[in-house]
Image (cartoon, rainbow, N blue to C red):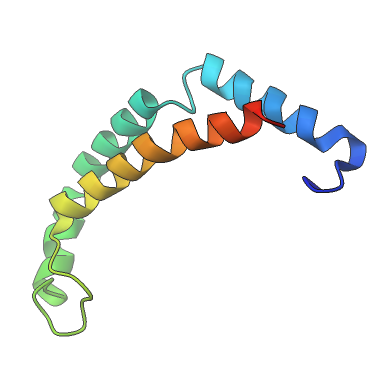
Length: 91
């Protein structure tokens, strides 16, 4: 739809993105707060999961622990949101 701009899709996408940013939903601050709240909510389950499936096991691709993975998610969002904004502004 983005390529063909069916039913003025590009403008609708940009408008929706801008609305969500204006409402502080698609911002790095909001995502950081959401991730931290979620992290706190699932802390017990993360501990149980690590006991069953230790991150030091051979089948893990890296040796990141839960905290490191959370930080990777937050860094990804911090990088990706400006990229998306730049892409949408060029449409």
